[in-house]
Length: 386
Image (cartoon, rainbow, N blue to C red):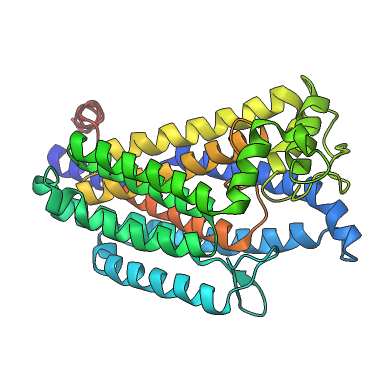
């Protein structure tokens, strides 16, 4: 009888999501919605829209994303093995399609207009890469130290995807996908010698991109000294620094940002963290960075305890995406990195990004359901059953 009761309790515990991870996501998303509303209403008012326009749309997409997250948390992640090659193929088709019929704000082509909203194919490409790499690595884990299995397929996939993004141009998206792929290769077992070669090739590709793209060169010069053109290409970086500096230790107070009143471009999007720094100060910004750090650490904790290699790699890829995007966005806003178009997860305005992020969170939660019970907990259950 004791063994039967132990088995029942074990199976019940195996079906529970990781609540610390879920709570962190919900807390970060809630703070993000509040800050997005605070940062967006001046822009909405200026554009002749209802002041809650951007907030309402983000909230709707957030609710849709939560529904998808809930579904994904119950959907057996092992089934994604079959869908991984299909996702990758679809992502390539979408990236080609965006070059043909895509739209953009400053001459680039990054979105497909669906009428009721705009869809950004690069967001789907991130998921496709994670699923495909996780499936491939788990199937060829014993051969990952060879060039044929541990390097060549990844170079081909990343080359095609990053090349298509290079044509949009969408350099930040290419950097993120290359970074996600590199981390998954490293964790998956690619030999360090081959891995170093791939990293070198990636750096060379980035350098080539900078030399070939005028806007990339301009961003690099402005990054080194944004005040060389404070009213032109350095305007965004300068206004971001002004916002963060004005915030001081405790900030001007929620809703009291001055730079968001048409001084800071993309205040509700890529540069929302500057508004966070201005309104909540160093202390508020630090707390938010701490929450992101805890989320990332918890993600890797789940990855280390996943039942199989495929699930572990899925969580590694998703966590790497959140980590890289967060670091890239905050680095840009604080002037540590050149200005790029990377959004801050769960904060920046963008329905496609939010929905896909929450869908990925659902995958992580599903993997967490299958984590084996720790030996100490099993012993406690047996003692209680006896």
